[in-house]
Length: 124
Image 1 (spheres, rainbow, N blue to C red):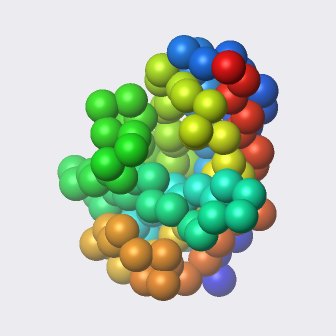
Image 2: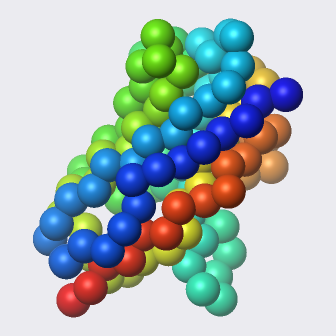
């Protein structure tokens, strides 16, 4: 069982930055690929970014590529999402997810554990 706790959400103006963190309670964090997903009101869950267990492989959703960066610190059991040049359309609840595999995936159904989510609101 892996428990995930996100933090770092909030209200920011367009063009600003935020860094989300997700702390995982697990003894073998490097065995878990990690992902970030988001869900805006009235929309489905959207893939944002993912990182492999060792941190060497990353991939991003098209709408955030070049603006967001995912990283992880396996010594701290934490994954991060640095979000730059935020836009109003980035407003959503952001979820951290862990997979019982070191290989990352863009599909939410491939993740086994989910955090409660953290709200990100970008004002224009």
